[in-house]
Image 1 (cartoon, rainbow, N blue to C red):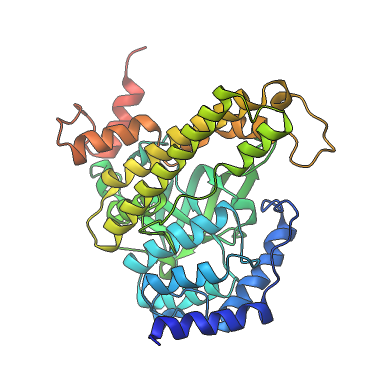
Image 2 (cartoon, rainbow, N blue to C red):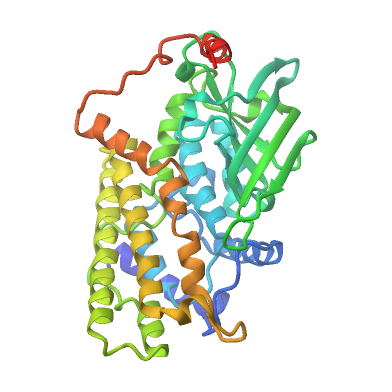
Length: 409
């Protein structure tokens, strides 16, 4: 037997003794404090068993193994209840910590990464601002030197599940007299820090996944700085690659056979008596193909990430593909369900899922940078097309703001 075979056999023996098998009930809502608390305990079980951070560095609590071991464990654990923190799990394990591992100091990593693996810390992103969304280099949250570190003042928005997170990875401006990309610095900020207010935002689908934050003289010690002072754009570039899906834990590089034919849409077609409708069958087939194409695209991006041959421009392909497929899939649900997709009995299991998916379907086209910004990145960074003329790239950021205030009209 190979070392991988031994690992798989050990996991197969460990799982039934430590985790519950998945039931047939609908998945729980990960947007509640109770759910998060329960899954922190499951995360701790994984850590104690040696199955948390399988590919993360051993000096910070991981196992330091290759991605094939992570995939092997996921395959063995497919029928068991594993930690599910919703989008907060994606930001913690898929974006924030991988970025920290590349840019933070060993002391910072030794303090935080083991706590993440034990389920004691979950991280969100204090990234976008009311006046700086897709143009992330335009952030105006101010970090001012203080005797014991830094003082942060400003506002953030669209932070996923910040009200359930323990820490936020915060981008702030530390130098206003250099061009906007050159005066940025990242900090770790506890979400219960004095002076920090976190407010959930009610969304069209009824949930409150996104939050806004207000920072009023929030004290942050320099030991919680991530990366070099004024060099935060390199950290941002790394985070954008991870945020767009490259290098996420356990990312499958080579999906084998396509999954089952759109189980949710097939079920919807069956409940509405339209499984034999030729148009519905064509819609099911085309949606299935698109799902598989997006999976293959994500796999290709994961491979490039492992080989360190990817940047935010290439990663944008994955986000564009996901945005288009999500919108098309949501439309397919309405087409298949017809009236039953927009009017239903609330007591019926899964009722309203198609309508909810449609209401939420534009999020991938906006969150993490709009489709237009992704297309710009592909055009300029991948295809080598001329950059759009920008008048604020080489000016000190303080001059950019002054000119904006003085702009007539």
